[in-house]
Image 1 (cartoon, one colour):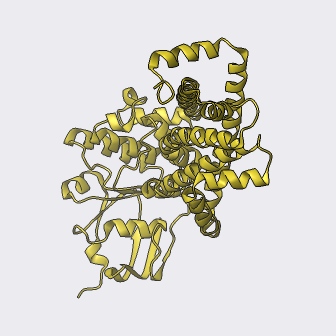
Image 2: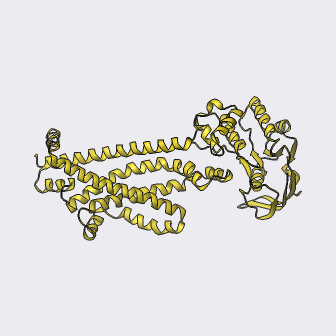
Image 3: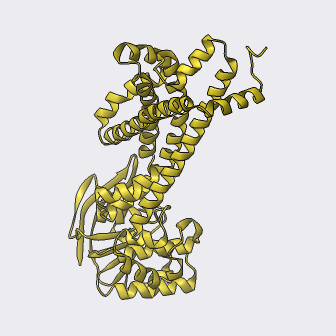
Length: 192
Length: 225
C-alpha cells in the first residue's frame, strides 16, 4: 500500500506541527513510526485517517476503511469488555478477539475493574475486530509488560498478513521486535 | 393551642380516620393522577425539547430564554394566569407540567453537551451509525443525570401541583382539603393532608427510581444480546 503526503501543513492554534511535510509511505506488514515526544506522531496518524484536516497540502492513497487505535483506551465505561469489542463486530468475533489478547475470562467485567494493561488489550481487541484495509495504532503496547507485549506482537504479526499496520512507538527495542520497517518522523520534515 | 399546631398523635389519629373513608381515597387518587399526568407530560416534553435543542443551535437559542423565564417566574403567577386560560381541573396538571419541563430540559441538555468528546471521536473513527452513537454513548452517558432530574422534579411537581389545587380548588382534590382545613381552622386536617402529600411524593419518587432502573436495566440487556 502506498500513501503520499504532499506539502502538508498542520498547526494547532499557534503551534506549527508540520510546515511542509512531503513523503511517501510504502506500507507492507508492520511499519513502526518513531520520533521525538511531541514531535507530531499522533497528529501524523490523525491526518492520515482524516481526524485532522491539514491547513494545506493533500494526502493520497489512504483507504477509506481504516482502523485507528487511539493513544487513550477510549472504552465505554458502562459496557463490559465483551460489549466494548462488540461495538465493532458480532458477539462471536468479539469473544474470539478477546481470547486472542488473553482476556477471555474478563469478558463480562467493566473497564473500571480491569487493570491498565487489560484495558489496553481490550482497546487492541476492538481495533483488531474492526474490519478495515489498514490498522493505525498509536502506542498499542502502552502499559504492557515485556511478556504480554511479546504476545501482542505475535497477534499483530498474524494480522499484518491480511492488512498493513502502521504503529507509533517510543521504544526502539519494541519497534525492532515487531516491525519490518522503521520510519523516523524527522526524516520527512524539511531540515531547518 | 391545637389551632396553631397539632400533636403527632392527633395527626396520626386523623390520618387513620381519613384513610377509613372512601372520600380520602377518591381525593388522594384524584390529586395523584392529576400531578402524575402533568409530571409525565413534562418529562416527555422536556426530553423531546432536549433532543431538538441538542440537534439545532437555533432551536436552543429560541427555547433557552423561554425556559429560563419559566424557571424563574413565581409559580403563583402561573397558577393565576392558568386559572384565566383554562378550567380549574386542568390547572394543577398544567402547573406540574410547567415545573417539570425546564428541569428535565436543562439537565438533559447539559448532560448531552458534556458527553465525553473522546468517546464521540472514537465512535466516528470506528464508523458508528447515528443510532448506535445514541444507543451506546448518549443514552448511557445522560442516564444518571436524567435519573437525578426525574427524582428532583417529582418534589417540584407535587409542591406546585398541590399549590395550584389550593388556589384553584378543584372538586375532590387534596389541595381543596388543605384550603378548607385552613378556612375552618382544622389544624389536624391541615397537618394530616400535608403528611399525606409528603408520603405520596416520596412513594412517587421511589416508583420513578424503580421504573427507570427497570427500563435502563432492560435497555442494557437488550443492547448486549
